[in-house]
Length: 431
Length: 208
View (cartoon, each protein chain N blue to C red):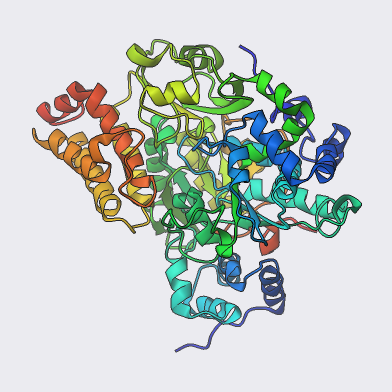
């Protein structure tokens, strides 16, 4: 199965210099940014709405609709979320390193569409090299008059600042990111009233979009709404970057249309499992997502809706594949540990609950589990995410707490025998 | 109380430049905390006081923010900070064995620094190198596809070669294996200390 390359086209065709402004312009770059200045807000918002582009950061919210919600007060701000930290996800890193000008051009288009004159890119602190590449691209764009005062000789000013985070997963949540960018602790804000489009950065209307979302914009202008829609699935247009990792032969970032099946993605695109191994389960959309198992989900179409109806999400596009050698208790504990570590501590169910889930899973894995522990796990989980519903019925400010419940609800649902075997054998049955 | 460390004129100029990039002063807090680390190797009380003064906020407000983020090190760390990812994808491909090998070779458990103050080992959550698992970073420069023996060699090499600048491509060539995507474009910039090397912070190495 071949990839459908849009945002990864240039890096595939010109691997040695896809990051330079010379190559970018030689392959048509910045012509759509120029065009966007002629189009103006109304036409650009309409175009992106018609394209059907869904946000690629995890929530899959329609990008054009988000733009249309921007409150009329000015100044308004654009913030690009490059705080890619969902375990399993490494696609934005590739876009930043290999085609940073594509992002800069997308930023210009998004800024013009939202009448923004000051944009920020919040890059996670661990992405030093991607941030350097982007910074160099920004400087090159300033050098040619594509950023700064009177861009492209128009009377439009646009400043772009690359801002480095400092190691906090929660800053990927958009309101936490805004707090962080304002120089505060990265604690999520309560919605309402803090919907960024109304009350965002410095209390001003703000658009927060993911790197991949923004990187698609030059292509939507070039192809037109219909051309972009045609590339993908009718409900889920364009392409999607899947970050595949874990026990597959060919892990990697793959740019594909929606609508293929999990079987095709895991066994054809990612090369299947290693010799003699079988597929046990996989996470379809980042560490926050409930898991899938071969018996129920292998032939499902990969779309936002089909994944949602099956009780999970495509999220950030991170597919983590586990084979039959995997101890699911240990894997779940590892994910829960992550959320316990990254909880900001504002909401009691998350702050307390995630740590308890981690400890209970840990003792089961070490062989000190008790018969009642499955019930205790489910009870704690229910206190974080009522009814273990998906999508969660939010009782916390942000979805981090409910995310920690996903691995717990998954293993108690599909692998209860393996949990009980840990308890009855006082240790891991797979070792 | 000891006399506060005075920032160099160059660093102060950089701080003023950073502050000017933002519509509101306080937004420069995070980059200024990195500058403070670059000045003294880690974040000291004096460093945080200087940041507070530059931004017109209190040292307590600075500490409140600094303590929220794991990359601001408020205790001394080694010249080389080895961060081993032990999140799910790396875990599935042997990160626990890799961490154990690195701890053993460095002679310190995760979270600690060797007696020479040369190497600090830490276990960290996902660093976005899942397709090249298991991965580690040295001073926030990534190496992918590292097996336990290569992890040991990395520690020995840091001790012996004591590189001035940590360059990801060099580490990848010497100690790495499979990468999550084709890196393709070599980079000669790198880190000169245990904080991210990023131009506006003035820490990118091998600049002429």
